Image (cartoon, rainbow, N blue to C red):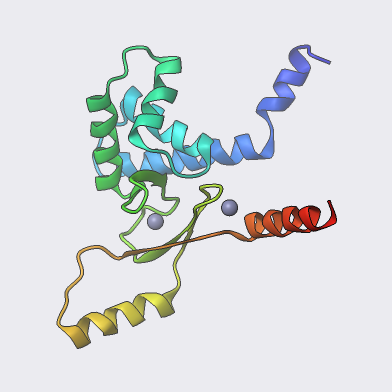
Length: 172
Ligand SMILES: [Zn+2]
Ligand SMILES: [Zn+2]
């Protein structure tokens, strides 16, 4: 069935609904700080949200250009800088990419677990890791200006796929 009814249902998918709510929340945090959400800024947020993971500035630009041929690299960078300052986007140093942060209400230390196979990024806020880093800094006389720890490896589903492929090779 491809009528208007199925289209209506598609727009009511739980994940579409959750995405819409996340977008609204991020935008309202931004507005509450007296910042304006422009079309370009919203488009960057939406692209990251739809991706559900990290994107480089170039990948973002490609996606934005599908909808708006006038998008420029400088415009994308300005929008990213804006959202980073608002706390809604984190920059991943190790992969030079950007990811949405779903709790931009306050600055927070966190850990970003990055899968180098599928690119999935999981943000966690383990207090134990954060306080261990703080103690380490105190012990060695460091004051950190960035509190996001990036940990790279292979995620559970990718490891499971790897094991399955290995087993297949052995049986071939
Ligand atoms: Zn965050
Ligand atoms: Zn993975």
